[in-house]
Image 1 (cartoon, rainbow, N blue to C red):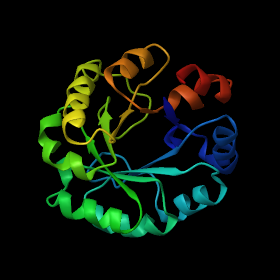
Image 2 (image 1 turned 120 degrees about the vertical axis):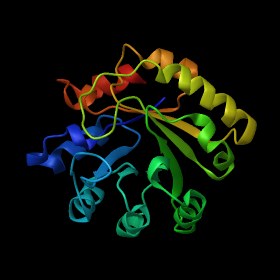
Image 3 (image 1 turned 90 degrees about the vertical axis):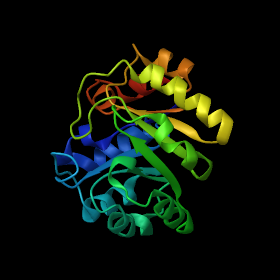
Length: 212
């Protein structure tokens, strides 16, 4: 299991220290939530802050776009060469074109599904993806309660991935903790985003290890 702490739950008054701390604590990716206040009812960070994160992070960035104009935001962050850029299928009219664009920039493309969206909706895109991110909360804010139906949804997605692209990874985002991590792993998850669970703990290293 790979762990990608979300900096949305970090103390932004000492963001550099918080990024360094999770990297030293053994995280695998640094999850960056970019929200535009339109696709979701929250506004988070732009390129100036993400540039600063990239300068101190010693682990790859995992940039999650929750925005209306995906292609514009891909251009904003592509120079940072994150490991992944993920975008919401609900907001993209031409997903295959955007997948190709992200890959052409030498970045791994990923699609995000909101809690109400079906894995079947992206079946014919799976062969072109490196990862699918399943939201286990409604996107927009950290610290929400885990939606338990995502476990069964993960199983369905895993079955489709096995048919079309066995190398594609599954990432779960929202309300993940040491109580539901085993069920997610057994369902087929490879990566978990953990914001409040890690940053809300007294010991980042112990929190990350408990998920691994």
